[in-house]
Image (cartoon, rainbow, N blue to C red; front, side):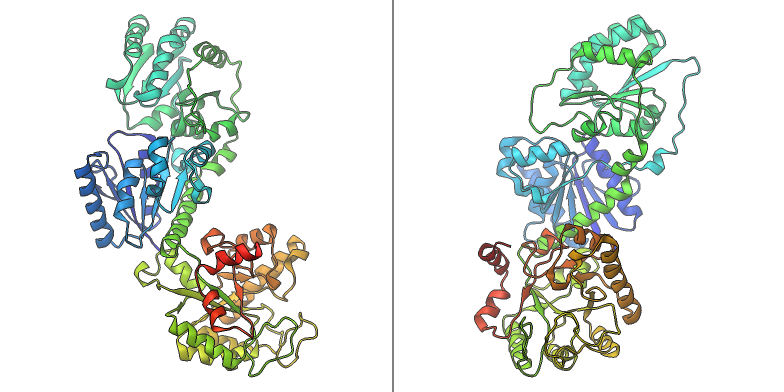
Amino acid sequence: MPLRILHVLSSNFFAGSVAYALQVAEKQAADGHEVIMATDQDGLSGKITCLRLPVSDRSLLQRIRNILFLRKVIREQNISVVHAHSRAASWIASHAVRGTRVPLVSTIHGRQVKHSALKSNDIYGEKVFAICPQLIDHLVNELHMDRQKLVSLPNPLDFEVLRQFKRVRAKDGTKVISVVGRLNGPKGVHIADLVAHVFPHLLQHFPAVSIQIVGGEWDSFPQTGKDALADLQARFGERIRYLGFSKQVLELIANSDLVIGAGRVAMEALALGTAAFAMGEACCHGIVSNTNLSAAIGTNFGDILSVATPFYPDTDAITRELEAYVTGEVPVDIDLAELSRFYDINTITSKILNTYSSAIMRKLSPVAIPVLMYHRVPDAPIDTKHRTFVTKSNFKKHLRFFTQRGLSSITFSDYLAFSTGEKPLSEFPRKPFILTVDDGYLDNYSNMLPLTQKYGFKGVLFLLGDFSADSNFWDVGEDAEANRLMSTEQKRIFVESGWEIGAHTLGHPDLTKLDDEEAKYEIIESRNRIEHILQTDVVSFAYPFGRYDDRIKNIVKQAGFEFGVATDTGGLTIEDDRFAVFRVNMFPEESMFSLFKKTSSWYRTYYRWKRGN
């Protein structure tokens, strides 16, 4: 289902963050989502609705105006999620969503100012994208951000678009070296160093080399760089040129032999088949090859280190490496398949949407949603060593208590629908809980279903995929009559009554004792059979006996389930780990106080403190 997404960003000059925001927003719109962008410039994109908003103006009065403007857009456009792309954008967006059910997600593109960020980590919202691993370490170690809210996600590349660029090489054998990047700040200082101390040697000793500098902010370029460039142009003429800001930067990169740059520039060069020399604000990796690709990715190709250290380019070393490149002594080998896997826009935008989904639910329900686990609901107590039953009369008391406490039942399918925008956020209940029932005993149909219908509750019924099983055969020594399972027609009645059906394997084995192929068959085939026979979508899976490990969780996830449901273990909230959802057992002797505890949002934290799991 489509989301209604509002992107907020500073665009007073064209930086990598602007390119990132545009590419993500336009891709989301192409995928069918409704996308609006609020930014400094009119008409920044012709593919999505752009609203002019002076995000970069940090005066108090303008910030207040910006907040009020965004609140109006959020309300009138029924926005599902706000995505901010700069600290200024995050600041106003965090105030705009305050008091609403709309979450904020931010992308951080570089190191943050320590003293201000320490006071305002909350301005970045429920989830934060960091574009490289070194940035994650900086945010955790220096700004004390919660690692759990951070997502390492690089700038995306649209390889389908990049493949359309045709490389053009000079027929006279000239090697074109392009320096691409804005000329202000530390990058401008470093480019000035190249112009003053590296390029004179290359131009003098290699007549086949020509150099072009591409980037805006000329007025901020250090005077030493301007003077050195003027001197080189006087000596070597058109062999060194300043092209200024260009909207055809991809064509310029594709037609270059080597590109000197950082961040997105280096990524695009490699994707276009152009050699890249990675040098950014923080460090220099030199010519990127398979040998140093991982390290370069970690710093966003030289732009970010986890710890700020003074960086002064070693111009002598750079000169030697570029000379070796020009003479062919340095082989450039890049695994484009690996690069595509890491930066592919389809993969990254999918992860962004998944993060939106998580952020939506963290905002809707920042505390634990009680997930209750029932099994049998017999007329009278039964002889069972596991005591996994609640009598019909007691179950009625449970439902009456839930009603008196103002609880509203939702299913995992409902939860998913809210998280993806299929259901409006305004309809999410104030006191939700999830009622789950395992195995599909006959008394679920005769006793449980009529009572839940009477009190207006629904739940999630976890069934075996083996519809020929007519009784519990995995708990030896249990009461045979109480262990009878429902018929297929009785299970269909649950579907018709609005219950969600989840999978519980074919034959209730301990999955952790099976090999991969056996576990996959139990998990995948159970879902296939349930969906085929009951004609219902299956999004949740319950681990038999509550036993699972990382291997089993991954199999469940790869099988296409959205949730993996445990017993007495798991995250503090569903969003901590959708494949280790904590459930609490319901027993025959539940008192009003125990029901109060088990349906309280604080119970999960209390349980972990008491039991350690």
